[in-house]
Figure 1 (cartoon, helix red, strand yellow):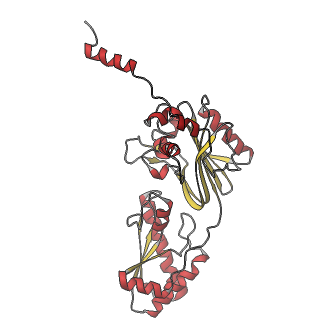
Figure 2 (tube, one colour):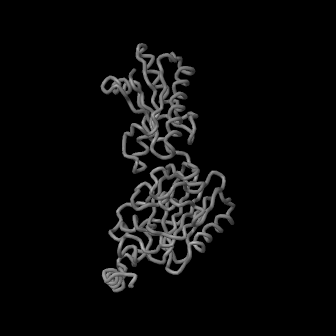
Length: 350
């Protein structure tokens, strides 16, 4: 008795004669050219023969980096990293692609050893299974724009690489290193197949490396302080007003001294309107755990209410502090510009 029926033999024959997807010459050429305007970090340099195909740079931004293995499978809606660190400052995210025939170990170890020689120390490192089943999916995914390195004015071939560059990558390796307040994260994977046709074919047997550098830097204070008159007008018209001129230490509820001008304007409005009672509402973006964000948002709202009461003589009974975390976004959380709008304090009439 035959183990397989005729239909199965036909299917196997079809599969055997199906041609492999050919690489797109335009994509192959792109893999040998740096993105226009992209430059190597002096901390890391680059692996010999690689091309810097994608890069984003922010003079001041916030980046959350895995510092423990991923928990949960790719299909698990509750998948997450066991632990993360969040750093603020000058942020550069760069994607390099090596020539064919290199291993992830060789490439990532070159970057790692360079950093160790410069005084960096490992915070967390993993390889393959020790990274957890959903690490690659959470770190860089074709269907999650927040994880991708998306440049500006990219041509068609380079734009296609934004999603494809880590798709179906295997032999993943990750190193998070720190020196002082500077963090460097290295994430590498060997491209093998992938679901992006000729773009994936061009990437095949090449190692993709995401190099993320966060260097401490003071934020430029470009937010215009909202004066007491503008606060009153917004409250009268909308019953609420967004305040952006209040600054906190990263992941803490400690107000920076640079918040003083905005606090003074809020107090000026409240003193001029002694019957007004308000909610002080803390908002965050979607980065980090939900419960943590809600707790942090409320702690910051309480810190503002306390300063208004203790330093500006606003009766505490007029101020009610609440935190809603990411529940009421002012913009999309898919871009840093949107996340910046969501990190705010709102005054709401009671």
